[in-house]
Amino acid sequence: MRAYRRLSVRLSKRDRKELRQLPRKGIQPVRAVLRALTLLQLDASQTASEVARHMQLTSKAVREIGRRYEQGGIERALHDKQRPGAAPLLGAAQKQRIIAMVCSDPPAGRARWTVRLIAQEAVKRKLVPRAGRETIRVLLESHDFKPWRENNVVRGGSG
Image 1 (cartoon, rainbow, N blue to C red):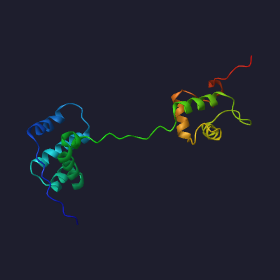
Image 2: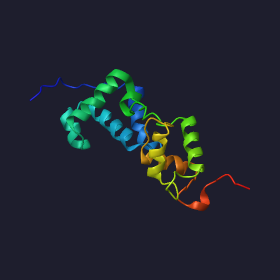
Image 3: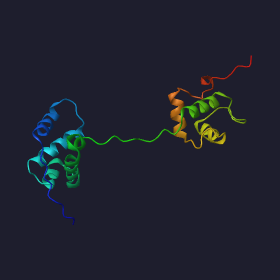
Image 4: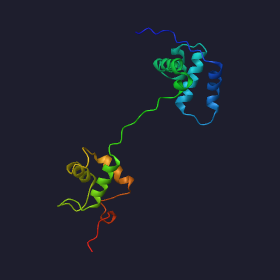
């Protein structure tokens, strides 16, 4: 079993006041309120395991909240860092090329475009290095496109 140093969190008067008022400030993220209550209990000289039992958290989570307060203050303790998210798979030019392809006739032997066929043809025609069905489906949905419905596709007339 690992031995932990005793966690002693000392809140400033201003931080303590802000943490006590947080649940009364209207709608707040549950995570932030739980973390605020955890910090208040740690400030009241309770051990991490006692606080964990009261707050129904793990001792590790309680220690992490205390450590984050010590390192970065109240904002860092209550809120997670912003996460970058995944980079978009298709650029604007690639999206336009795929939409233009869907507006043209489907490949020979096919009556209409399907999501799977669009993904395959986009890679085959080197419009994109790779494209999944879900990426194509979201692209079509964002343009309110339903190429599998024959009357929903814009095609150039021959007359």
